[in-house]
Amino acid sequence: MARMPYTIILAPEAVEDLDELKANLRSEVREGIETHLRNQPEKLSRSRIKRLRKLSQPQYRLRIGDVRVFYDVIEQKVEVLAIVSKSEAAAWLAKHGKSEEK
Image (cartoon, rainbow, N blue to C red; front, side, top):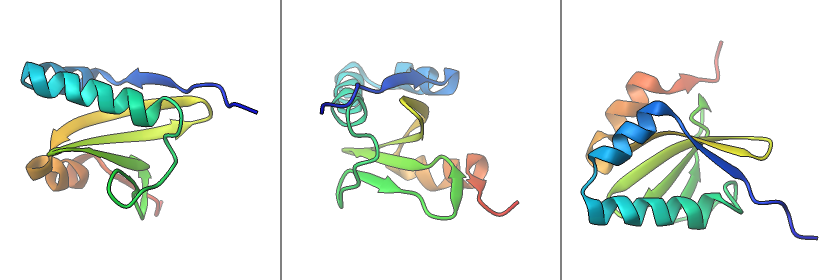
């Protein structure tokens, strides 16, 4: 049985991040989000999708070239929290990532 496609929601910050990308990169990122997150956002792969350990938010990272897309999956929704360059990813996670430990 085919699963329903996921609804993709971009957080306001992610929309800003996307707008700041160069046009060619923006379309590549949009395409990557659509390709990987619409149907199987939790399908881990060595190169693309990674479950982030020790974090409750974001839960996942999608790699599209030098861009990192951080997102959560809640039921049938994918919430894209941020779209950052590889060089900014660690700093973004340090600032915005929520640890599982309460």
